[in-house]
Length: 394
Image 1: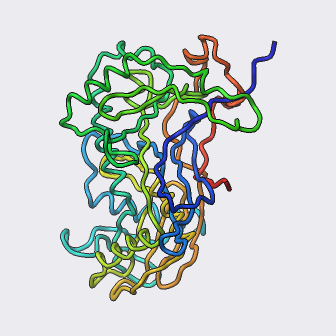
Image 2 (image 1 turned 45 degrees about the horizontal axis):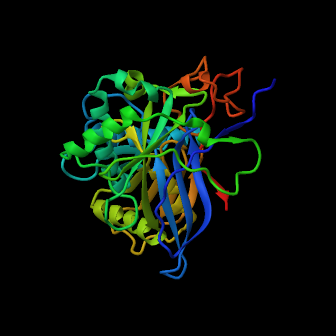
Image 3 (image 1 turned 90 degrees about the horizontal axis):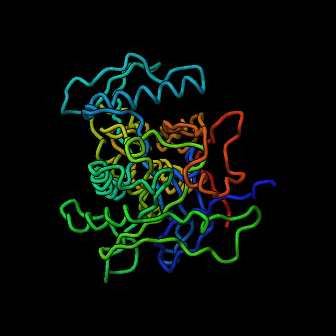
């Protein structure tokens, strides 16, 4: 008898303003068939149908495992070197040579480079979503608290991806920030609920074919402090994170961030104004670059793509900076934002694959009788491919 064909439906909450009209969704997949990034793009009627992007989920990816923070000067040179190498891969010629720190540690430019035009000063900075980084910082505290517990307490979660989000009890509608670090009572309650939770993967199993007219009810667990979560089996691969290594499951945060095209370009303008100093010839803005802890945030590259799709441009030109580049770390795509707007090279890569382990045997949930389905990885490769963020018209 053939096994039933189908897959597990992943559903994530999103908070959208009433005035937003959706045009398409954008997402990228991890090797274990959970999103590394998901979002929706549309328009808002508030400001004459201005384009807006809503990031609904991202899974920070470790680019470098380090116990100590990466020094600022090393990260700056790393960004310049990566841009130059990507240009060499695309065109056969490096953008810069003889890359070295600037003459003064506390003054611009960060870096001095040699080019065909002679020596130039390069300032490097990152395009970030600080509200999301702050939310993930709070969520990281919860992950650390789980690592401090006895893993056997969470045995029922082994082989699962846990989607979690937070709502403010009695507060305004929308998703809230994760639990505060000093809210020990709320954290303890959430840990207790995680330990007691029994996954129900069959409830989220969908046979092959068109999606159902009505979504299945989520097998949710709730806490009195506003935490919500449910579990989906890991399929095909498993992450090589410390949480999965010690406890056998992973945890992802659903949290919504909204950016209009105007607000996104205002952030570019702020970065240009901040670095527009004498001696700075080039401003290199990198999206999706690793932070001081070696973490990459996929939503930041999605924001860069949104910027290029909605070319509002700078509202005022810089006084000293002659050229502004926007470079995406994981895709290798580069564009010039000033003095003209144009694609420079790329994209070069399909995605950035986090470290993972192709599964040799079915997960515990499938051993218990759950269907494996056609979403399993190819038997010849043992892994699934995580693609770059892509859009689907809605």
